[in-house]
Image (cartoon, rainbow, N blue to C red; front, side, top):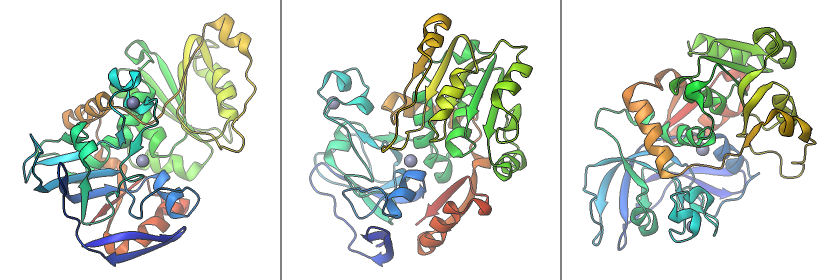
Length: 348
Ligand SMILES: [Zn+2]
Ligand SMILES: [Zn+2]
């Protein structure tokens, strides 16, 4: 089979490698589509290390073969892949929060080969823990790949009462900011504002016709002044930080009304993650701060339902498609802001 193989950090080659054979308890998937994500970019550039030579974790596939011992999975069935695999036994896994597994979760595309290949193996531990999530026949493969990143946004906002929310501000106009905004919209937030410092990014989102109320260039207009004006000085109900800029957390706290919520969706640079925060704001205004680390099965099911029901329209988000042969070109397009990509799909 063909695969995009990491030869050494920063060096990827499209190669023909043996098609894997499913061992006991394993399932062989034919990859229908696998989307490129920002984390893949960091792995492919050599900045981040993973244990495998084939990455890709936003996967839609069809079962090509099932080995003995697997129950409830048939050849020809379509699934998307849950990335996170918990230990299944710790207190967090027992309450179905495997993304917070106390042993540290393992993941498809990180500890097991991923989807930038024609075929991939679902290991027994993933099959046993229900990491194959069924999708309807009429859901396109490329929309299926959006379930994984969308599930992370569903998780990051799960404690924000968006159904009773007037106004949400998202910092960051990349795909993750957009997906957070779409979750806010789908759950009933009345106004959703997306802020980014890059005008061409905002222009792209406008051109794609995404359902946001305001697209604000926060490099030109101060978010604090804009929010003060837009809310009559009251502040917004929720802020999501979907850009790895730690000062946005302080800035976001300053935008919140009383009892508001802030989600630190983005991870911050590991070398410098500390940011001073006015704790009296959290104290007197009774603010709520949330983290976001990947997602659990429940979040996948919610994300799938948003896309299947059409409550979230994933179609405008897919801006580019490439065959596996042109994988390196796809990686370049994603890394180059002037190319105007939002989500890039590889179709092996
Ligand atoms: Zn991802
Ligand atoms: Zn666990």
